[in-house]
Image (cartoon, rainbow, N blue to C red):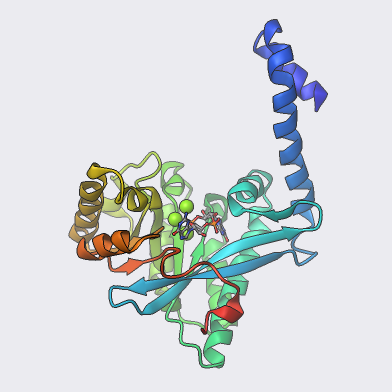
Length: 278
Ligand code: C2E
Ligand code: MG
Ligand code: MG
Ligand code: MG
């Protein structure tokens, strides 16, 4: 790591060495530790799924979102915002994503077999997973294996997927829709959004990025932004989900604005599967 830090510092000019080398060294070292431990995480059964409920406007649970959790002996609890980017860069997201899809389907089927009615499972999908030629087959097989219907599943995609122009995105989306699988745009409005894809791609749902929802309490303009996103979604015949709802005032506003579903710490934290029944 000293070599890499030195190399980078040199690129930035001689005088930067003493200031920047130690900091870069620490960042690179932390990332490489995550990568090293992540490699064996699946085999060691360190990855699990937590489930966060989604509620309809009447306050009933209409589904859950599966969220990865990683507990490692050396690193402790590592949040997905830290390890998902590493998994994406290293290709580990392929086996990890496969685990998530399969485990989430298995869990939904298990809940139902034990009388816990959960309408739908939402699963996050990285661009690299979607880019795989066999992605639709993988989804089809997971559904079949657990005797689920396509309508039981919602895949959460990000705008990164569309902006990167992943091969076959339009065809794969149509094939998934033909299976009954619903497609949601996660973190809508947060990144470098382009709206043109909404004209052509068979999307079902917009999830308003939680930054907008949380700004409802503080920023006067936030109300109009969420209002406009809901109007856009509804004009296109899409469902709108408000994520990151933390306060009663936010909940009231997103419901008044017409969001069909809400998700957030106010109504339910991500919890282990055994807590979902309660
Ligand atoms: P996301 O898909 O947008 O998931 C929502 C995130 O917001 C979750 O964070 C959730 O715990 C958090 N959240 C929910 N309600 C609230 C709230 O009221 N307030 C606040 N402050 N946060 C709330 P988490 O579990 O840390 O996941 C972060 C991101 O990691 C996810 O964002 C998703 O992009 C990614 N991720 C998680 N699991 C997976 C997975 O299985 N596959 C892939 N590809 N990405 C995943
Ligand atoms: Mg999500
Ligand atoms: Mg989100
Ligand atoms: Mg997010």
